[in-house]
Amino acid sequence: MEMILDISIIAAKLRRHKPNCRRKEKNMGFYQEAEARIHKELPSVKGQKEGAIKGAVKDALLNFARQEEEFAQAIVQGGSFGGCMAAVCKGIGTSISDLEAYRRAAAYYFPGSDVRFEMRIELAGEAGTPSSAEAAGTPSVSSADSSLREGANKGLVIDLADFL
Image (cartoon, rainbow, N blue to C red):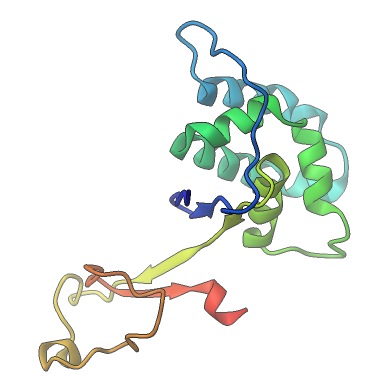
């Protein structure tokens, strides 16, 4: 089963993380539990690098949890946020890209997952109007480009994975 989330976390088909079953508390879904747990553990994050990126990683994880209840459940039942941040910063040297930090954080809670980032540009005055190439019936981006989404005529889609 393939799950696509906004910043596109995709669960691997071959390696699915199955957290231990746990009943939801009455009137409290896994997202709220995950949010409460991360906020509670946020101050305990140690290390200069971890401290510098913990806010952005927290926001990304909560975004993923909001999109997919199964990911929120993995946060609730998985390791600590401090452990997640240690795993994210392990061996990074002096820097790490946002995308790689989010990938590592997602994989910490949901092994086998991946994170994709999508950027779009809309030029002023041209948003929503077809380009001259499209009007002539000539595609402006190769049809083999996997990042081009059907119906996405409001800009250019750039998938960073194409550059890796």
